[in-house]
Image (cartoon, rainbow, N blue to C red; front, top):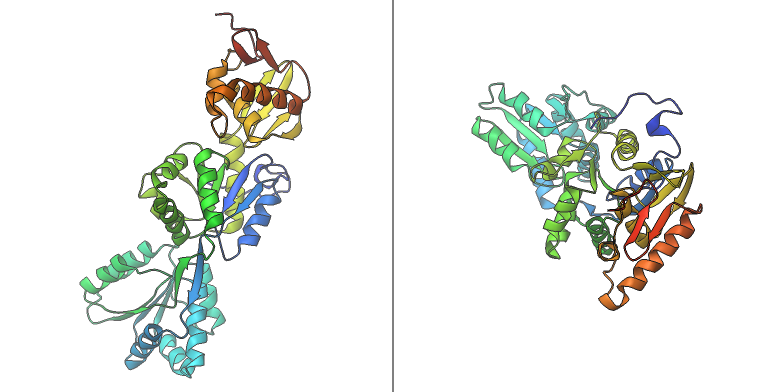
Length: 387
């Protein structure tokens, strides 16, 4: 799925109500407020569940050792994977009194920046970037380097929170000396309860999409689900009713490798991700019909009746979605009972269904949308089913 380039005020993905009625989980730590604001500005309900945290390694012996290894001899190529990582490396070098020497070495090397943020960090340090891949992916950087003779070349690779084992191994097999520069690492967020709640909400369909801005956040969510025995259920939800929205192909990698369909923009930017969701969810996550002479648009946690947005509690919404699967056809109480959140006991099932129907009718407002068929069940007034 790609985002439209039209950014006029009234375009679909920038409309103030484009995401009204939808709930979106945000797993980002850095810039999470910015992404949440972009989604809320379009009407979405946002569930914040930070999945990871960045741990700087300014005091880490491994980073200091890698920096000294870079200074031992000229470096031919430096792969810069993230802007925040490169800035952290420069700051650590300054703290060790090695900033001038490191800048001089980097200034004589080819600086390969994975994306615009990395390129911006290079230029902010007063250095000149040599090349940036069009796809903003480490895979394209690897292919670029492997297309050259790497025998005897010294290549520094700034890691981005996790090992790049395959990347580094390929360069070494091609004859390069590779220096791995671990500037920071990703760790699970200290309080995992928001993430676990989001996992539960995704499995039960209480959220319509989850937005990811980094591959480590995807892995952290899958890891938390696995620890609770819910990974298969989470992947199944992503494969069916919950949209997995990723800022770019690197972020999407852990999901696509597991066969999960993802939605992503053409450009790996937060604004483009928000616009893509604002286009995709109304196109794929909305049921439109006419019942009782009224126009209904059923969204994630709300229904639009004749143009008016009406939020619905989980039980009435579950009943409405079940009735909307076959508009005009009778759905018996037993079928409605199984979709109710929490699964009421058999003794309370009939009462729970009746209460959900009552609350649904009250929330919809106009009468005649939901009909009772005596001794059979309920239906949306979209026709007659007398079978």
